Image (cartoon, rainbow, N blue to C red; front, side, top):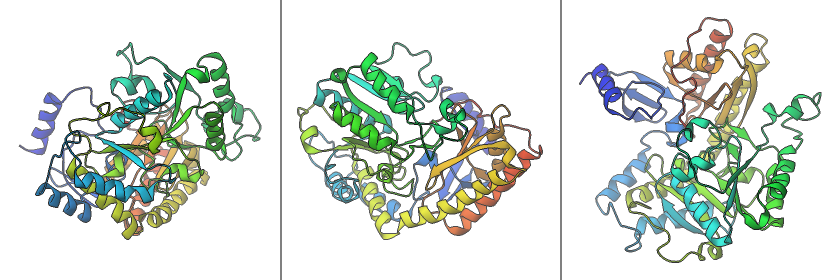
Length: 448
């Protein structure tokens, strides 16, 4: 079939409930680029929504998966141990943000791992309630729909959802009403910490600590707008959890595996979660997710309460081992911080420029998890996205606010980053001067 015919076929036969940026058809990917059927090559600043962190078809990851396919494809976890599963644990233990995180369970997707964390927290504490953050994204399965608070579309029309879930504000300083009316006293550098007060009130009014199993938080909001936690917030949240015998669960599905410039985002604030959730970049595109906790917590579960047909697939685990090795051998985090500084400088310069700054409300993020929130009411983010796509670069919008996010490969070259920065700069300039009034078809749609 031609590219147009394939696109029409997909539109006809693929579930309508899937939102997508474009109806073009991807044929191949290599490094920082994807190629569409028909030959169009595009610089990819989406990485499959933060999944192929080492770029498309990383040679070492590809080789490891190809080799494993010839040895063992499916070694079902409830039947026996399989070597790639154990090899991956051995590779991950030194990368954990705290030595207490030493016992693992692998699953397939981020949402499944979130549900595994909830199962563990409820069973280990013998308490039922879960507290999540407003603006958070944890998945679209039945359980995680109740926990996701970034957009109503994820749970709209599917009620009744899982009970026992409460929410509190995340410290989103750019949208904080207290900060907006403080004459500059409060901001991201000096958070008012009202979300912690709201949490303490919730624990008194709605979910007593004796009923609360865990607080689940993305250290950097993902689909909610790429909003990092301000200084001291996570440490104080940890103190509240510790004081009230509540487990702290870090959802590092999107912000983990080097995305923020450290292996895991919680390392920026020197906080030790009781349970940590991983997925996306763990195997560079192969379906794999995980939770990790301390052994005494994991050992509270009876054999048979955890498992799954494809959980910890051998090929995915082999790919994960290669990913962990690449982080060490290729000094990936050094590149994240160097390239992240270059991209951040481009975005900060655009905000500082009187011409382009008129469309930019906020620039934020860590490492190569960066975002521009635009002045509301004009669809600027979607217009910038459309302009980037015209220039053969893929980017994504996110959040209920008018925000565009940048998720390039963590090993992107200096040259490709310079190319991407130039495209972004030109796109913002075009939108700011009114040259690009057309928005993409994704405005208001839900990805993750």
